[in-house]
Structures are given as C-alpha cells and as structure tokens.
Image (tube, rainbow, N blue to C red; front, side, top):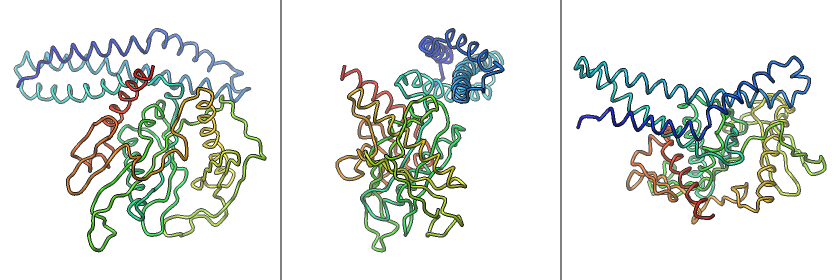
Length: 370
C-alpha cells in the first residue's frame, strides 16, 4: 500500500505543534538569553555552586531547543524529498523518503513522550543500580545482562555513562552495579524501569539443561545537584575502605581506594570503587547517598511512595517485566502489557518502546489516582 505522505507529514507537524506548545518555545528562548547573560558575567565563577547551576541549566535549555528545531528541519527536508520523488516519479527517492518518514515518526513520538516528563526530578540525570536477586548464578548473570542492556540503550542514543561500582559474583555475572547516565531527562525516562525483572531460560550453568527462573532488581534515582540542600552530619555516616577488585577477585588497584558508605539512621549503603583514588570514590559515594536521601526526604514530605532502596525484593510476586527465552521468545511488561518477540534486540538496548509505554502508563495511573 502506497504511503500517504501528505497525511503522515501533516500528522507529524500537528504533533510537533503540540510539543512546541507544551514546551513553550518562546519562554524557552527567553530563558536561554537570560542564562547566556548570566554565564557571560565576569564574576560568575566567584560562586562555583551558582555557576554550576547556571551552566547546567543553559546546557539543558539549549539541548531542548535544539531537539525541537532539528526535528522541524528534518520534517521540512522530508517534505522536500517527497516532492522531488513525486515530481520525478523516482521510486528510489520515494523509498528513501518512506524510510526517513519511519525514523522521524519514531523520533517525534519520543519527543512527544518527553513533554509528559513533568515530575520534580524528571529532567535530572540518573543513577541506576542493579542487583541480582533469587536465582543464584543465573540471577548474577541476568544482572550483568541488564546492565549491558541499559548501557547499550544509552550508547544507541549517544548518552554518556559512567560506571561507578561493580561487585562481581564468584562464578559469573554481577552481585550489583551502579552507573550514571549523564544526560538531561535520564531520570524521567529510566525511572519507569525501576522494579523487579524476571528471566526464564534454559540455564547455561546447569549441566542438566533445566529451565531456570531468576530475578534482578533495578533502582533508579535522580542525580544530586550542587544546588540541592542535603546536609549529612558526619556522625550519621560510617565509611569503610577496601581494595577494589575485578572479576575473579583479581586486584585492579594496589591501594585500598574503594569506599563503602553507610547512612546509619536509614541503613542505606553505597559502594564506589571505579574512580582512581579514595577521595574520588568517597565524593562519588556521597553524591549518590545525597541523591537517595533527597528522594527519601521528598517522598516523606509529599507522603508519596517512591521506589527507594530496599523496596524492590527481586523475587517471586514482585516482577514488573518478564524476559522469556524458553519455551518461547518474548519480553513483556506486566504493567503496560507492552511486549515484543525479540528478546535479543531488547538485551541489545532496544527498550525505547518499553520506556515510552511505561511513561504513558505512569501518567494514566497518576490521573486515575487524582
């Protein structure tokens, strides 16, 4: 069936009109001008915390405006390509236009979802923690598969990441891992991934080839900013240092540079070992600890239940998504009902559709709770 380019392009422009309206592009442009003036002030860096806030806000605003303008330009280029193909009766050009239409439609859909991210911390960068649950060595291997999945997702989008801590299991996989996704709205997008994930497959670690069910927990918190006010008294923190290690327990550092930080009142524990020095690992651990405590504080103030460390049990009865590799191939989100028969693609980072469905589901849940 021939593509109705005129109809499809009209729909794209209508959606982009809504995106521009919700984003309030004129106000965004005024904000950028104001931030640029602040950033140009000669005394800006006299106050490093304020300077960091200004430059971060300017970067986010510019990125948001660029995304919208770039998408509008792509739609203009698509329309010109279609006109050329139709005037020349060039099937090859029209096929190219059809492929570009599909790519733009997907990108516009993701941009539309971005407008739904209006939570207090949605625009923040994210800290993702993964830990193995029930299922022994298969669960540890599953935890490593999930970590690769999220890192590949970020790589596909060109999002910078930083692995902060990895605790390897004895036989294979990971006991736990923590990494940052350093791009605006990473938290808003990935927060819907928090919960218990379930894997069903023929275990590669079972010499009898039996089917194994295993679990892993994913926690997502917003990254603390220098402007956030979270002071932690020294007497509330217990700090242990130990030697960083890689797979198999092999030392990768000759000094005790890894840091384990415990917040005594809440029992929250953060470990960091991937920085080069103990001072850097301590600073990274404190930042993540502040992020978790900030989220806990806001949750208490708003009397809302949030996904905090310890809430996710990583066992039967709590799973939010199932990854089934045997006896059939399917990944299914149990909240949104979104599913795909391509688990290999999902584990290679193709999770945008799951994230989009999760965000829309969360919005609907919030509406129904009002």
